[in-house]
Image (cartoon, rainbow, N blue to C red):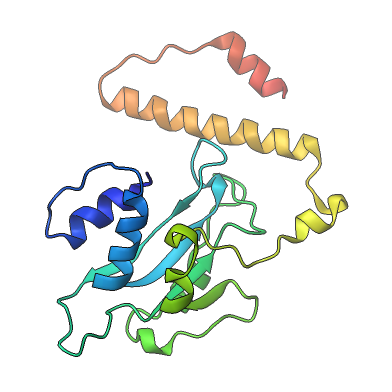
Length: 197
């Protein structure tokens, strides 16, 4: 069960916990669509976390009281595709939010429009509720890298980016350990190997 199940369940049920039963993820997603105003899902890139291949969606929703006219609170959900065709790294290519913030329209969500590059797309309630298990992992963008193997980064560039990301992560953990009063023991041999890479 995903993170959204825990958060969504607690927030939309006035804080009552739900049980981790088979199918409860689908129930939570239905509940979010039917009884909350789920209005935005950014699909985060898999490289945004230290562990690769972690897929995450962020759900923007509001708890709303049931409407007197029996109309659902969610009538559309906007999805922003950070995941497809974007190569994100911690140092060289960090996640940029400017385009997302512009598309989000915090002051007037009714002014949202689909972007020319197709990254920001509107999905009506009917389409989402009809998906298998009301799955929110929506894919619509085509990754150009999958069409053209020549456009993939060379292995040496990928290896260098991994080294830089690991060095940045290590530096952050060392700073945390030192701030907590811990003694950081440097592995000179490992640092020499990394420096040679």
